[in-house]
Image (cartoon, rainbow, N blue to C red):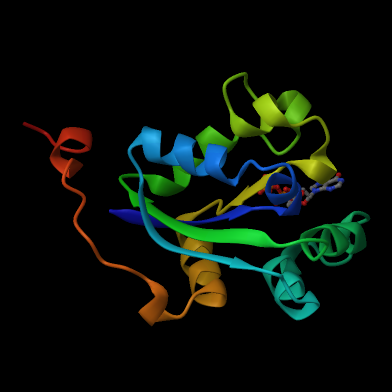
Length: 151
Ligand code: IDP
């Protein structure tokens, strides 16, 4: 099983799309193992997006992430990183496939609604940046064997 870090960004929160994002991940078969609603500090935003420091969109990206609350989550499942990125769609909403969150609810890259880790290594780093170990909930979902299994 793999875990990945997901954010419903400020535009998703302001537009009342937290439920829609959670619904799609739940329907995919993924399991929610941690969640919190918070106002992101500049310090946390800069750590999270450190890789983009120096890019033309960096300052605006930090302002965007800190502009309203976000919903931070950890989702678990087989190939969770790949599955969630697929459900989110391409970074630019106009390049995202129909049926993905970014396509179905977005138009601009600067308001693309969600973040999801792009590799298992980055997922681990992002999970430990945003969550304490005791905030993760280990639980068994009763329908797990109907979502993942080889028999
Ligand atoms: P990702 O979120 O799909 O992993 P990244 O390339 O890692 O995409 O970019 C991180 C975030 O930075 C994007 O989700 C988007 O919010 C923002 N971003 C990326 N490129 C641009 C841009 O050209 N203009 C404005 N914002 C951008």
